[in-house]
View 1 (cartoon, helix red, strand yellow):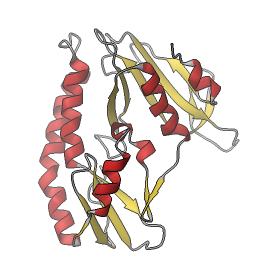
View 2: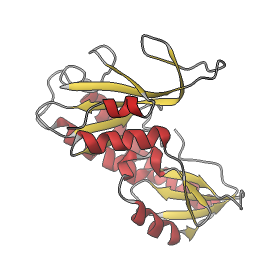
View 3: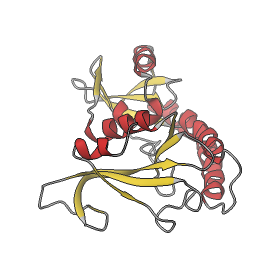
View 4: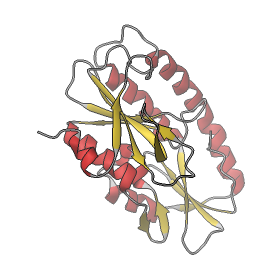
Length: 228
């Protein structure tokens, strides 16, 4: 049976969370952990846990919600968010969840036709590499003006999802299978946000890949209107 020792074996650190340290389902989770990658750099100013371990990058949370054997990996760092870097992903068992956690911290970007795609930082796309390749190769050119219009079109969806998530996260008496209800709201977020991806040889071009892989566009010299 897989255990959290897998994290320690690859050099990651973790700690259990109590009710005060995690708002979402904090009063009801069967198990909940925060996981980070330690650093040996003395200049690091980001610290983790009671031991104040210096860390690289962001920590992410691993949860076992009530009444299920499914595990959740989540991050909600953007304020007010959800930001493009945030996610909520469900896995059928601990082993698959740990694989995604390890890939998040120790994996690397994937080169797809020169585009540097950070699939490892999006656990919600675990196992969908082939779909990502197809989506990217079908990318269409888009003007800056049209990109701004897309942002306006999807803004209402993000605002509505944020409001629903706020109430779900602070529910003292959650509905059965609330992690699935929460996941359904995040699916709306994924349809309304785009990853902004750089090309290794053409820095003036940016790929905008929708987080559910449903759309992809190539824009020249664009600011990022989707960043929260």
